[in-house]
Length: 537
Image (cartoon, rainbow, N blue to C red; front, side):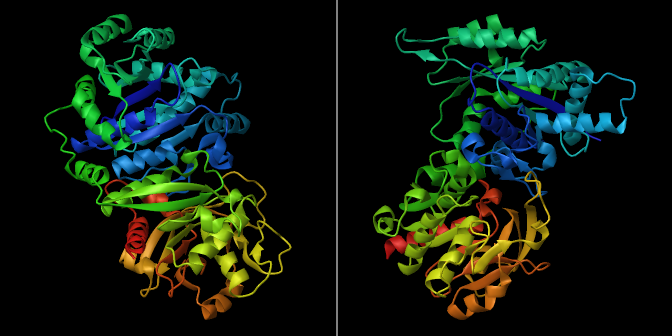
């Protein structure tokens, strides 16, 4: 069995410094050197998972193959490493406390007072080591959410202190990501915030092994020496993380700074194999030097926060590079779309994607956007709710089923063309109860989706409660909207298409969750290709 090594990534000074991108970039470099690596995220909030959080609150909720609703950072991990994550890769405080309280109720701690130390920290320790104990990984990178000094992060920091001591030298190290701000008035970079952040970490009993410094200006030699002296690290352990033009350039920047070499030496692992990053840099080359540009409208109800559609926007980057196309996204709020202004709002677009979502707000605007793309032969991709809106639009405007709707929006609709799934009817709890994770789908050979996937059986990730109502399938098929993908077990309609339209596809699943740098999702690749063809016409 492998002697798994652990790397912990903490953050200081401020949130949103990019711990997830640094963790993913380091993992990529270690993977390129031949090590098997995985990354997990420990989130300090008390929700069990982000599944019930508003996208405005937390950004996108990312779904794994095994049906875990997780933090959007797991999307970055998968996109960089090209390997799937699981339930074990995301842990929240809510899940930790729930597990400990369940044990207490069962009587596992009979006679004991249940406390943060050792019971909560032991549970965190157990969750951190689940992936390492599989024997599948040489290195587990654990990102601690939040910022050092946050009250909610304290049990995690204490757990890292204990583990670092228990696992011993060369088996566990801490990277501290911090900010070195540039003060324009003084005309210099300031190290004091980093010093204070490291001091706070040291008060918790942890000495960082490596400092990664986010900065907008290059660190001078004297600043590196100063940080090393005041933060108890060697000068070569001070790594510059300068603002990058794209997150996909960060692995190259970290390699240039020697982050992977520093980490491997501290873990007493070989640095003989050098990372090549050939395929990665080929992707970057295409991404940075496109031959064409297309503009695609993303119709959603959370567009003010682009992170709410993070996997979709990243999928466009991957598919764009595969087609050597720069995909410009026009973010369009569905709530502001009406029959009158749709022609103006969608003017000049080469394709339209109607995004996923929940609830009634903004759905009439989505329906209007679908109608416009259908009638004007603009390439269309509808995802989850977007697919359902395409079904409702067709029912109302082609089949003449006035007031057709989803029972999610109108339980009294006379024509429930989208209805609650049978398995969902007796469910009362909201969290973790949707149809989640990977499900099979069989494709019709004579279809856009088969042309994209080049296979008849696919597996895609889902997150929904409502589905196409098969009682109306015959009517739709007769009028020209056909089901080109169904679940082989349940007969659930997974994909709808308009064969007499240049490219019109709606999918019940979320293809964006499976798109990676080295494996752009075939559906996005085909959609971008169709948008380019539409532009040329």
